[in-house]
Image (cartoon, rainbow, N blue to C red):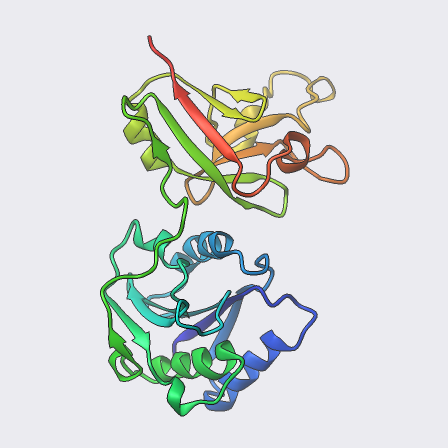
Length: 278
C-alpha cells in the first residue's frame, strides 16, 4: 500500500497532527504515514515549498503528500490535487507547488470539489485526509476534482538577473535548524548565468568569493587542529538540495552563533551575486 506523508505548520503541542493520522488510520488501518515536518513556520509558504521539494524525492513513486499550510478554503485559496513526478500532492493552491513545478511539469492538476459533501472547519483532516485515502485505494484525481491547467505562483521563486547578466539578486527562503541561510538561487541557475566567471556574493556587509562543495572543504586540515579556529566563521555552499546556502562552520546559536544570528539575515532578505570582469 502507498505511503502518506504529512507536512504542516501545526507544531507538536496541539492535537491536529494526531487527529489527521487517526482519521487516515480509521479508513486505512494498514497504511503507512510518515511525518516530514510539523514545524513549518505558521503560514510560511516558501518554507513549506522548500521542505517538500527536498523531501519528496526520497519516497517511492506513488507516495501521497498531504501539505497542511495555509489550507483554509476560501475564494482565493482553493484546494488542489497534483500528480507530478509520479507522486501525488494534496494542498491549497497558494503557491506551495509552484517551486516544484518550476523544474518538473505536473502530469495532472485538479481543483478539489468534494466540499459540498463534507461539513468542515478543519480541511486537512476532513478533506485532504479523505482525498489521500481515496488515492491510496487506487482512486483517480478526476473523481475528486475538476481538471485545471495552472497553479498559483509563489513570489520570489526565481531570482532576478539584470539585463547584461552581471548580477543575480536572490532572497532568503529558509533558515534551517542550524541557523544556516538558504537562498532561492539553485546551482544550475547560478552556473547558467556564471559561465565560468569569478564572482562576489554579498549578504548585508559580508562578502564571499568561494562556494564550497561541502562544509568541511572550508577547513585547512594541514593546520594543527588547536590552531584552526574555524568554528563560527562564515562560508557558502550549495547544500544537499543544490540551493545556495550561507552557513557558519559548526554553527550553534547558543555558542559560536549562526549565519542568521551573526550576519543578521532573515527570511526574504536579499543576497546578491556580482560577476567580475576579467
